[in-house]
Image (cartoon, rainbow over all chains, first blue to last red; front, side, top):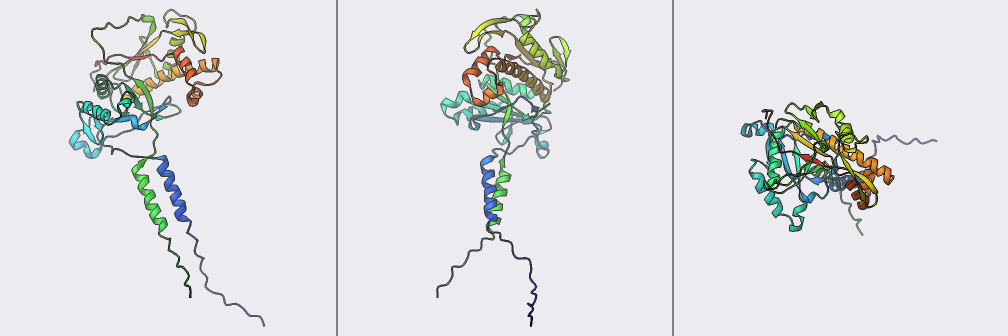
Length: 156
Length: 194
């Protein structure tokens, strides 16, 4: 006599998730290696212009950044809507560029000082007036290596 | 009786890893910094007279407060700027209104005609940054294209490949043969707009 096995109410077998952490860790390490820590929180709008003939900025430790653009919405009550300069984490005036550059130089090794590059991260809707002022200031300080930060594009 | 070792529940390991992952995603940036590298002129010494340059050797590019271009005294546009710059520097037909050149022997290249041409760029305080970058970019690519042509002609490889291979000797020869002479005049405020 044939015996029939009683059909059990079998659910879907539990998926083996023991390798899931490994996969996630792999992703984590990938991101840790390919990205760099964000150093400042932006207080100005910063849509960079596009250019075709751009060069990569080498030696990130020797680069100091100056951000220029309109203040973000939440800071507009305080700083208005005209383009302003941001140094490190604060919105600064033109005179403070001098101290900023001096600070940047002091924090580097003496041999590296002539190699310091100033990267101007300027919003594309800014007028040249502010930028010219900053450039003149940098000239006075003898910080002559500059970089107009712009995105790589195939065609403008 | 030997009790079997109890397995550690690793189910929450993934959650911890996710948490870390998200933390890194939020706090880091992926952008590679790229840009147009320029060198500012050193501060002007008022006692030193500026060197005299013949008018034919200066290629004047003006941008006004309305983002209009004036190239060598004529209304220009951004699309023809590159070709005009190349023609000015190269001066293939020896026109008398384009740049002069003199033959210089460069190591690794032999005798080459090196142009004396200087591009003079002047902008107004009211010029938009986007336009300024466009112009800078066009000027840079004009020089890069010329260098590329020379590199292909003399070494059989493109200029960008020389940069990638860090072939310093050849790069120097090319740079000496086609110096990137972009001078920025002292700023002016004519347009009135800020």
